[in-house]
Image (cartoon, rainbow, N blue to C red; front, side, top):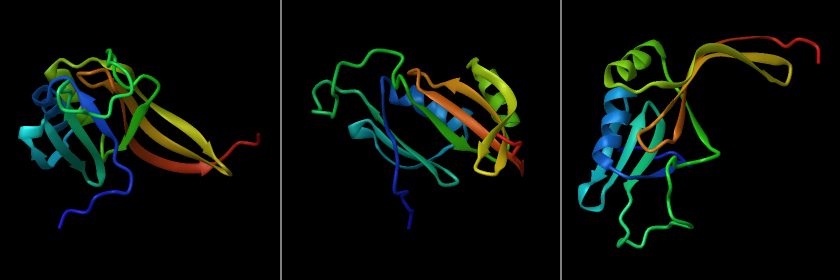
Length: 143
């Protein structure tokens, strides 16, 4: 049976089919299950999970305010992937520009620095998606 994570963001989207094309064809997610009659899909990419729900003004959805693009202001979703290069290529072929170019970054985590190759792209509704390929850890420089 499919195992659901303990924390799964649910993103409101303006066009479920367009969002599925981005998340599945470009990023490589698989549809774990969906309810087309509700405009809903549950996606998985090797344990990274997200739910997409198409906005329907008549459905009584949990919206605290009217939605305005870009959606998800103030949040970015980091997703670990095996390799970023093929995803960047898929995005280019599909016409999605990178929000932030791919680069190797180092983040201090206590006494080590964690390396990751990362880039950021916006999904069709403007959510910021940060794709991360893990590199190595190294000793942190003195603070």
